[in-house]
Image (cartoon, rainbow, N blue to C red; front, side, top):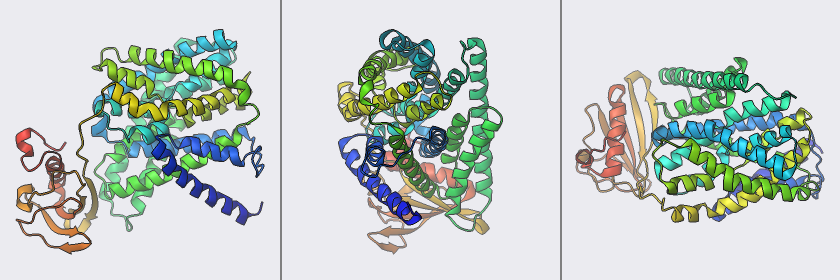
Length: 494
């Protein structure tokens, strides 16, 4: 096809995918199903008969898309939200992953009849939960912050150890040396985390001290730093996936200019990466092969969902304060998505025995069990009595640097359910050096008086010196959560 036809097709697919986001949101389904459906529709069995079977290109593009998706996930992750859950998430990502691989691998050998290598490769490929699927579904549920933080952090962390195992099993024909594999995994994960922290911290320090000429450059710089951490890690034979996620978390929670704009840009790039990735995976799948693998799909899928995932959650959370309801929901909420399908291309590139069959099984499991799990998560949360009563939304604060004045201009949007509504300006008790200079209400701006009450939906412009910016943001968050007497309730806005 000519370039103009390709551009028209690409634009049409993106617009269809955007419409599909709305439909899947209403149904409580991850959008990956709609995107893969589009890929199947335009593929070799569809009306356009587009034949795409370049597995090596699919692997390369898939890994690149996963980097962007992980970067977006890290940049939009609140460290305050996930901080307490990180130790448990690390345990689930490593210990839980190993337990899941053992259970599913044995089941694939005994029940499906696979040899040990493709059986444990299949188990490893299916082990990680998917960041895009988890973020798109779970962030809409009013779950306790500890549980939702655990599931979000797990989906960001567990790609790294699985990639090491999948690559090892795909490139080594014999039984791997477990001690050597463990040593490699420890090094790659530790080095990847350190690289991510260093790149994120250095990037944040640099961006805070350099006033870029255009606000649109900040999101590009932040995303470039996260992607750069992946490249730095892989050059040092460390985990690039962990590096990109950790650096993105550090940058996304740093005191940077234009943070909401950066998150918005990252979300847009993440959506585009998801659309391209899932459509490509739909193109790569062979519709004629998928129905033939439905029996092993159901066998392996139900073992994963009903045995391997619950056992891995229970074993890996021993010693952590989690109720049985939280463990049950975490077991049901282990959504699979693009990550397993992309990882399934690695054995195909290496010509591993039964790799094509493995890809079909993984593709089927993602589709079938996403349809089963996604819509039932709200009901599962109710059954497990996990609905959170934390209804007050966080403030959306954007900062623009005033370089010559050594100050910042904060743009604060008051959400509908914020307790800032009704508070008068003087009752904010902002620290010396900070002042509300302008209020935008219903499209009209005015300079407030000390007794001017704030309304839901207002946008405040707050000028603050560098020295008190952090305490100003903390005070605004505290009042938003608990009202003007937040200090009496022990709310400090951290």
